[in-house]
Structures are given as C-alpha cells and as structure tokens.
Image (cartoon, rainbow, N blue to C red; front, side, top):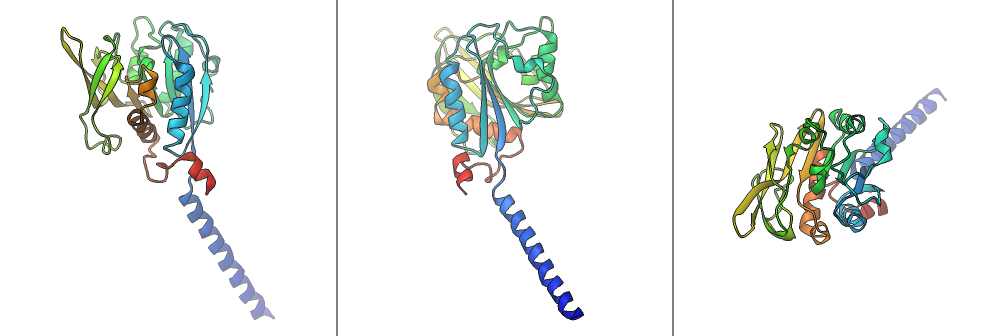
Length: 269
C-alpha cells in the first residue's frame, strides 16, 4: 500500500509540473496587453477625430489596449483633472501625450506629470505635446520630451528621412513625404535625445531641415516623440501609425513579435 501511495504521489506531482509548464508556455505565447492611456485635447487640432484614429490604428498593430481621456476644451488653457492627482498614471504601462495646452503653466500640475515619467513611466509625445506646458523661465517639459521647439512653418509637404537605420523603431520603415504639414523648429536638442528622422520642407524662400522623430531618456523613463501629425490625414496614414506604434512598444521595451500583433487577434486566442 505504501508503494502504491508513493507511485500515485509521483504521478500526481508530474501532472502538476506538466500543468505548470503548460501554463507558463501558454502565458509566454499570449502576453497580457499593454495598458496605454491616450490623452487628447486643446487648441488647434481635430482631436475628436484623431483620438480614434490613434486608438484604432495602434490596437490594429499591437497588443496594446488604449484608454482615452479627452477634453472638448479647444483652447491653449485646456486642463485635465487627472493630472491634479499625483497618482494619475497608476495602472498604465505607457502614456501618449497628444495635448496642445501651451498656456497651462501651473508648476505643481506639470510636476505631477513629469515625476511619473521621471520615475520610469514610458511616454509617447505627439506633435503639439512638444509645445505644451511651457513654464516661464524653465525647460522642465522640454527636457522630458528631449527637444525644445517654439514655432513651426507653413503647411507644406515634409520629406521625412530616417537618419538612424539601425534603431529597432526605424529598421523596417521607409522614407516618405507627408501631405501639407507643420514642420516644428529645433531650438535645442538635449543630450539624451537621439534623432531617428529629419524633416525637410521647402517653403519657397528657403528650405528648413529639422529633427522630427527621436527617442529620449528622462530619468528612468523611456520617451519616444515626433512633431509630425498636425492633420488627421497624416495621423491616419499607415506609415505614421506604424512609426508611432513601434515607438510606443520601444518605450515599453516590448518591441517584439509577441506584441507586434493586433489586440483583437490576441484576445481571440
């Protein structure tokens, strides 16, 4: 009887081990979706339409679940109440900043945003986010995004050229020319910022050439930014969405085949 019980115990142990190994393999093949928070609103852009272009485009390309926070305030003073809470980012793996709020200059409010990223929360900054939260006499926000910009040219096509062809974000991407778009200037490139693409724009009287896509390290947080994306036709362009999605995954250190698959496909498995 003793030998029989020992045998049954061994069999049961093997089943448990096999079960455990199977669960681990299954979990490796089906990673949990990244939780992304997309924050949109403020001046000068069709954020109502672009928020959905971004959410749908990213989820169609990556194992990322995008939650939206949007304000209908279309001024440069648009605020987001969640930033008043120091724990505003709890539960999210990455934040997409797509705000245009240059006249929101409350130090504590801005510090709540920055401290989350400084402490390791990945970020993606799109277009007018680079011109937001300009605290008087301080470059705190610019250090976070990686480049200081203060103006843009007229809406004309931008020739986008990837200058770092070995970076994981850019490897499969091809140079392209946008529709009429705004080219942001570069007043300062901070030391941790690494250019990925430049934009060349002929405005008739001269040709401007600036960094338009880059990575940055802000404290413990990885940051991906692009100044492209003023018009909805650009935001909905597959080439733009490919770039932004890859930048998002890179910022989370998840630019892998397991995450480069549509959210819907992962949920079906």
